[in-house]
Image (cartoon, rainbow, N blue to C red; front, side, top):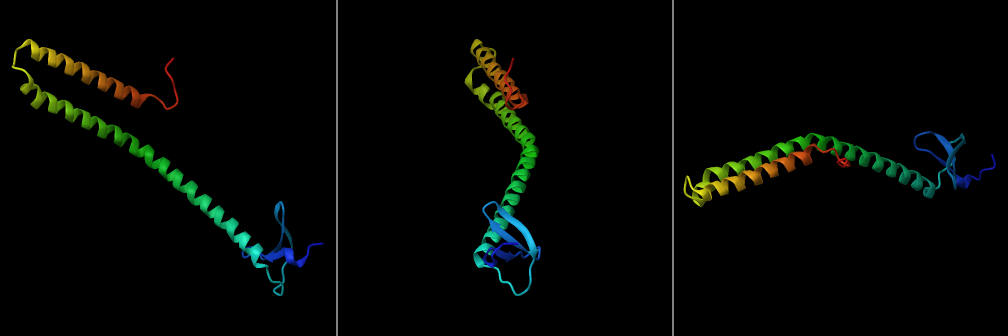
Length: 138
């Protein structure tokens, strides 16, 4: 076939000789047990197989991370909601009583300010959570 024996090597998988050229590896005639593969070409074959294996592992890892984040995302939303609710409960249970005396104008101002901040926090958080990624309001 016009291929010198220095360009041929035995594939560990296929059992046929392959021609190493600029454009990659092409199949040629079946090998015999007497022909030995040059170590450089075999090294390149194993290196290419290693990169393919690495690529498959990386793709599987990224897919696993994507699936994990799809399940973890709602859990993060619940966790943040619990934290915000805990802060609101602590404010109205412990802190508000110590800031101003009951039935005073100052207490009403504090309650109005706290309710405004809490409602804005809740509205902005849930608007952010329910906005699809990459979209803008019209």
